[in-house]
Image 1 (cartoon, rainbow, N blue to C red):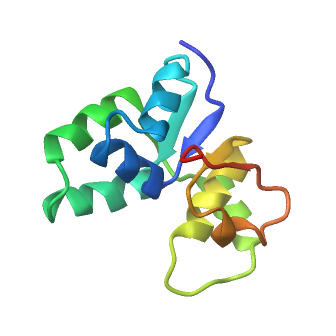
Image 2: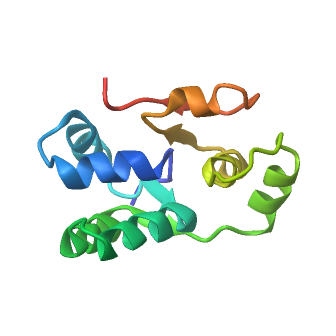
Length: 125
């Protein structure tokens, strides 16, 4: 199993669930198993959405392939150093990616543009 390289944001998970043949799903399929993970925070967001209309079986399958990692102490420290933005899990997700040294994969690159040192890719392109 490969070392993690990418951390998927919630919106990319939703793109993959909504369109299994779309660009994000194809990019995921190209990656070595284990090289793509997500945050427990994204897992919570997507599973909440699954309770309200997203495909719950599809979400379960996605998270079998893309392991949700626990948000730990190092991620909390990284979060504490970021400029605060109310009402958004984006800062927690960014901090998680930074603490793990991973590239954050998101379609909302603009929401993360003000975070120094965060590496971001948009797989919807």
